[in-house]
Image (cartoon, rainbow over the protein chains, first blue to last red):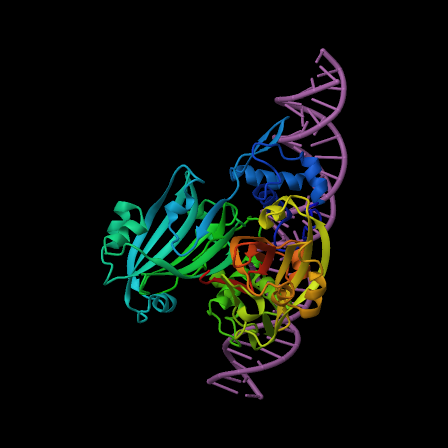
Length: 249
Length: 249
DNA sequence: TATAGTTGTCTATATCAATAGACAAATTTA
DNA sequence: TAAATTTGTCTATTGATATAGACAACTATA
């Protein structure tokens, strides 16, 4: 069959500039395999006609993607696709960062960016089954794969029960390993709520994104096998680099 | 705790206009309950200061949301929140449209927009375990809740096995009921892949969105309890009206 | 080695986006 | 009723976005 082209689906005076819309389309086309890796993109004039815009507008889109490391333009030759398809991040009953990306990347790790103790907000307290205002430890982390940021997360743990988990996290670089030090050798994903929005300034900096990018947001609760909530988390994934694969919970 | 404000997280020359970013923020604030229903928003000058932009820019954002039916502005009084929180659309082993939104809406139904027979594309064939090019039936549907579009989906079925499912769908308005006519009284969600992107022109029309909106996209395969694939689907959800709640598969 | 095809750069122009200030119109409050 | 608060409208200016055309620089190929 002929997959429906989106040639005509450009929106003017939308609050999203044409070059950004076209950059999104090119990213999407790469992600679904329309433009294979290392292959040349259609020439700028062809893209301009395809999307119904001026060649210069296409050039703006391309230059943003070159900046972003997705494309490489060579004068006289063409413009080439650098990045591979999006990582497929699995979400299931036993969602673990490192194991989930095995096979798709040669290297991955979690960096602890910051940690603090704070009173639980309404939603954190609800998620962890604590009283609002109870002390919780917050860990700010970033997941990286092959040197590129693929996730940015905040995790909350009951302070009394998990005192020192920040140090464990800094040392081991793994949530799973850190929880093991507190006698938790298995945990399950109890609930996940998913949404999407434009990246804000913090996301741009944390995930090395270009302005206008979209982030997927998950809010989740992890529990022990017998149902005790141990971790409440909010994670952000760059939609252009990551898709979420929901597996059996 | 003090939830971190995103007052400073406005990006200039991003390809996404400031008024669109602020409209997104207001939607987000409503969604997480920062501005309760029927309550007045902070006055325009306060919002302008909060987000670090000119009052006129805030007005552009508000007028887009008024257009969208989210806010109502009254001269001399203030600007008020009309719409409730986002619908929470459950995704799990037995994802069903109607049952999933029970309790959140008073009314919901699926409209069959179009149907056709076509040769299977690569990904459809893979999903259904057919040869590429085999005949499949495509059903284009829209899900509506309380009169507002909440999803837009394309579903593919093997044509030989499910001949006439389009008529059944038109008649019953339910995928579950239609499949029942073919002897399938239970089916499971085998896989779901999730991504997000800017809405294209088709999404805008189908889902009654304003330009610049974000859509969540799921690509899923449904199977019979013994593992036979029966349906391949791609669904789009307006991120501003719907969040996805991942439950046990 | 021409020639065609492609990306890079420049100038010019029109429209959209954002800021700024002033004041009108409507509502609430003192 | 008067004052304060809030949304609505208008004018003006600046910078970003998009279009248009011309030509330079580089590469591959006939």
